[in-house]
Length: 334
Image (cartoon, rainbow, N blue to C red; front, side, top):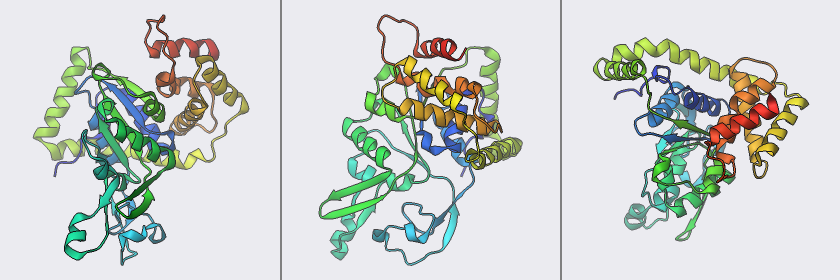
């Protein structure tokens, strides 16, 4: 089986890569929304990042990848407490997926053959402790969107139907991608994504040639290509693991909290989710840079990806949301 394209070998798309690294450092940031052209490495990046991360320890056979025996749901009926290492899960949620496939449902085969009511886990169970990836998220059916909103809020999947009453943890990094020209995302779901980035096809010849060369080498001499980028991926993995440990000791001065609050207030972001996400993203970025205290510079560098999708629409302002965020950041933070 061919390994995913190395994360470090992705040409350009620095903002997208930074956003994904920040959610790997602190998954509570709330996922990444990537909007832009097709064929710009959106799905490649999420698979590459998951492959780069160290494997997770999970109870053997656990359908929700539980780390400890005491966390295995009763309905799993496991006899073992042994753990093994599995790759960080990356689960695709395809358009047109039924609610049963997403949440899980009654195991019809077991019900018919053995006369037992049993639970057949869905995609949310498989994605627990990993990534749930939705391509063309803006075309997702409304009832699936509502379902994801509930699960994202609670971190738990609850299934109550056909005499079953099942619940299990469903904590994952949500990564959605799409083309804005094909449809807008519902504001409720848009707000649930911690970060958002916009990607575009490279415009200069040299960059396009680099992309072609690396993809060609990956497909034609996969083993050599993976060895070539092994050290770079390992360096990124080590920095992510170091940053995770550093987060709890990172100092957050009151002055920087004031910057965060003033920035969100000036932008008119609804609620306080903007402040909380901006703060988490800035802290993760500071830890990634191996800095020991949060500063105005960290906030400035991640404000665009944390706040761009939270702006209210202004029909009189023809500038893009990125430009509007940039103006406010310059005004408030200098």
